[in-house]
Length: 250
Ligand SMILES: Nc1ncnc2c1ncn2[C@@H]1O[C@H](COP(=O)(O)OP(=O)(O)OP(=O)(O)O)[C@@H](O)[C@H]1O
Ligand SMILES: [Mg+2]
Image 1: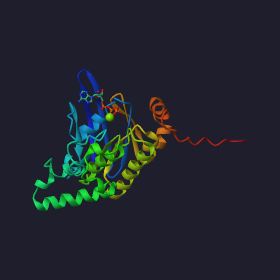
Image 2 (image 1 turned 135 degrees about the vertical axis):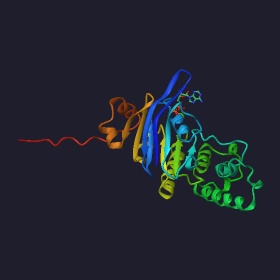
Image 3 (image 1 turned 180 degrees about the vertical axis):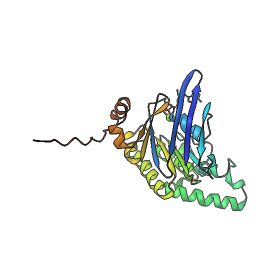
Image 4 (image 1 turned 45 degrees about the vertical axis):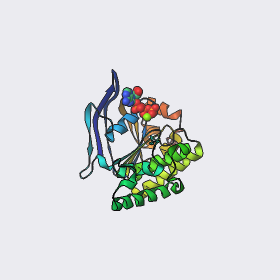
């Protein structure tokens, strides 16, 4: 589905990504964890080609391209001067907003898609509001809708619940899991909220010191992960207890 090969990227004299490689299985949900400033957002942007790498490549399976990638940016990144509707329509119309300037057939197809995803994220009644009139949780749902409206085969979610209260965070995480069941996009999700993230993903990638220092399941994280990865995680999430050796009595 998607292979990331030996990616390098630095900013000034600060190396951020120093040989990042992994491959993703179709329809999997992958959690990307690691310390703040470690390059998770940069990595997602490189996959979505909104940021360049200095070395390495992102290889899509046959028939797929960057057009099949949907990225939900950290903090949402909505266009404040556009309505909720136009924000969500944006990836469908290549930036040709307002959408009422489009030919009728295209306008109708865009309207169907935007209306459907707005209903899914529970924002049908907010279509013509401006982002500034929405709560943080609603803005995140708009962002999620914008990432999903084109039904991307590859979905990149950058800290979709950051700064939200526990109820709004649960709403967003439940929506992501529910929509994943329907569309089955290959998903990479970054989150600092490990209690919500780790149980929801098939596989965990740990980005530490510019490289993937851990790649495995939650059980592997508790078992075979390097000590520094386990200690990063265990400050934020109670790792499952390892099965103990049976006691042999003679
Ligand atoms: N456009 C840019 N110009 C200069 N430096 C940048 C730019 N984008 C990212 N960086 C730097 O790259 C490093 C990695 O940033 P990045 O945002 O990817 O971290 P992160 O792992 O997503 O952190 P967080 O968990 O806090 O979101 C940081 O030191 C950041 O300052
Ligand atoms: Mg980030």
